[in-house]
Image 1 (cartoon, one colour):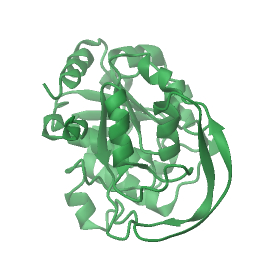
Image 2 (cartoon, one colour; image 1 turned 90 degrees about the horizontal axis):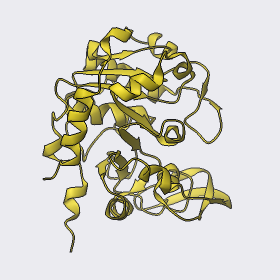
Image 3 (tube, one colour; image 1 turned 120 degrees about the horizontal axis):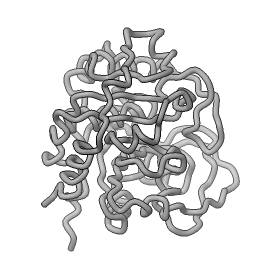
Image 4 (cartoon, helix red, strand yellow; image 1 turned 90 degrees about the vertical axis):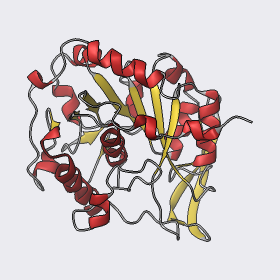
Length: 293
């Protein structure tokens, strides 16, 4: 039987990206302000998330933490999801409403276009019964199934408490989430959106600098199936302040991030801080492709 432990981010990932710069493309409209974006992607180790893969297929690391989006990109054939209309799915009980199903065509071919693409899925250990609904995260055992059939795919776990709730969340007022920020890939803290998972993964990998675009912008997000006016919740604002406190000047925005700047002293990066050749990026990709020997 295949050793499933190799599918999880482990000690081999710790500080593997020390002295490297990461360029992260999230879903906000400031992406459209970037000069020479294709060149930046070519020369820098680039991360994107969720549905952004359709827009930026030539990136180096793809991260998703959403059940329905993960299934869309890791399934090969058409499949069915029931629309989740609200409620709760906890470890031992549930109370929720759902409506008619939607058929979705799998887009696994996009993941396979680049044989060197590293893929990370943020999973939950429970509940496991959201698999057929448009809510929550992929369960770990389904993640393991995808790792078996999709090369260079790895898993981390977003923490839930004993009741199955996403708590505690990243917050500058919850010391545990600061002290243990990005420390344990099997216990990354929730923060309301995909950026919290991404930033903790990259922190664990030890990147010396993270330059982000499309993060905390005012305007429509492209991270969904259709452009969406994204409103930030209190949980997401708390997590944004926590990211800024932990990373300090090592995390900067290139354009946009108007919402984040309202709540903390978020520094702007210059184009000079980005890599101008793919040398270091290729070195890191080679390390990741051989991560487990």
